[in-house]
Image 1 (cartoon, rainbow, N blue to C red):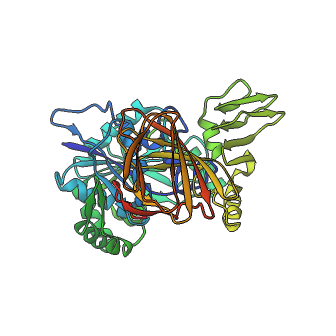
Image 2 (image 1 turned 45 degrees about the vertical axis):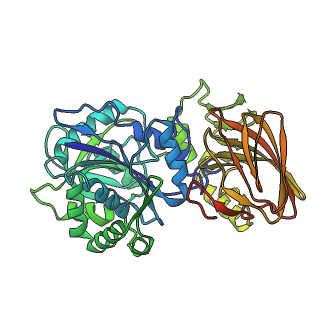
Length: 483
């Protein structure tokens, strides 16, 4: 039996703004431990007990086209390379995403069992999670569609629920019903009854079984996704489904498209079963959720980064760059980033969406990206700017290079702080070492490369009438970018 982790990494929510941005969503953040949520998810099945004849294969990752280099780099950082990375041309929810993954899995093994996990969840008790997955695999191997229901701890109104049916074995139940997000009174009844679990969006199912079920329940999604996959292209380890066919696909979740239909129609056949999971799970849907699961000091504060709290209680303080201090506060959320700071009462944190909308309405960019911008070759950080100038700190990975390019409206001064740069400037190619500099005149074709084994660090001073990033004409690029 082949077991394949399938990681669904779509979405660009801003409920964790200002740390989460549209171009840097929450699954890429390090909110709990040394790894990002994506990395933690990719490593979550390591240590799974394998039976004779079983193999845990590299994961299949499904994510958005615009995050491709970030996704690939984060996986490379934890030693996962040469894995299927399927890039959705646009968001179409989880049913089409899982169908793409199943089509990729069945190329080598139609009966491979997919363990489907969202990339943006935190599970603190991973041994318990792997034990539940072990039970789910046995059921999935008998062609069951297995969902893992989260044992509820509070009357949560923000989650869908699963009502337990008849017991299938010592670990699993038939799914009697999927229930939409309830009101407070109903959620309290669900919790008190002990007959309901939260729907966490985690599944185990054979690739062949999923493809059969999506065809049975939503033949339109099955057909559109198959056409998109069959007309796929592949470059730089990226699998790109055909945009024309994929855009035509209906947007639908796994639950709505398949599982709820099967659960409502099943009788003794028990096609859909649920394994209860009590593993300290959280989808970190808002800042107060991070406070709830975080390690607290004696005053109930969760303190992350360079922070000092005096006479402060039950507060989340997170700093990424500067010292943040609080005096005499309680039940607050304070999040600092280089270009934006959030201060909010925990009781009103849901209104963060109104803040995001106002920032967008004002034409500002703080909801789109961080000041530090990741690129496939490294990153840059705009550390100062003014009228007709901009200063960037640039880090280039060993062996990496920027595109061969030119600018119509700006000149650039480069100062090497650490490492050695290979510079192409017109017809010249030369090296620039530490504490040396060079100048790129306006309109000159140029390229920056790091030929060494150490990270190249530079300061770039731009000057000109127009300094935006769209003033780039690319002539050659190692990463397939054309803009």
